[in-house]
Amino acid sequence: MRSVLIVDDDPFIRKLVATTLEDVAGFQLHEAANGIEAVQRAAETQPELVFLDIDMPRMDGIEACRRLRAQTDGAEGATIVMLTAAGASENETLARSAGADLFLTKPFSPLDLLRLVDELA
Image (tube, rainbow, N blue to C red):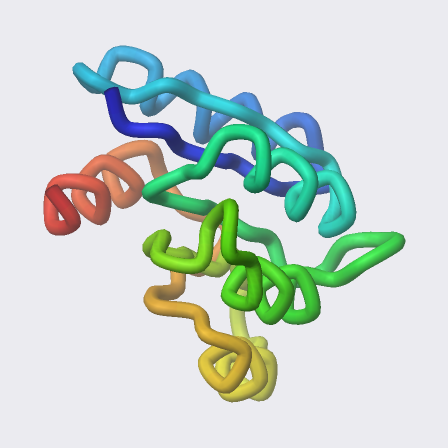
């Protein structure tokens, strides 16, 4: 079973991603509300796929991405998909340098999300 970590400070976005992916066979879903929780949950769950919001309190997604890539017991090899606000291209450069693989611009539709996951499978 593939482990997926969904990280966003907005509970609606976490629910949207989780609801969209819950019927995808073979996914075990985990959630975190900020970057600090993301690093902890990744160590516990060793996700293969991480959806990571950039703009969060306590620790932003860029720093969380950097720390996930540095882990030796968590998400260092995971595919990290950054969730970005429309028009935030300067964040994409920072996120790529932190180790992000892909980007999904908010707002996104469940269909966009499923298409992305299909491409990764």
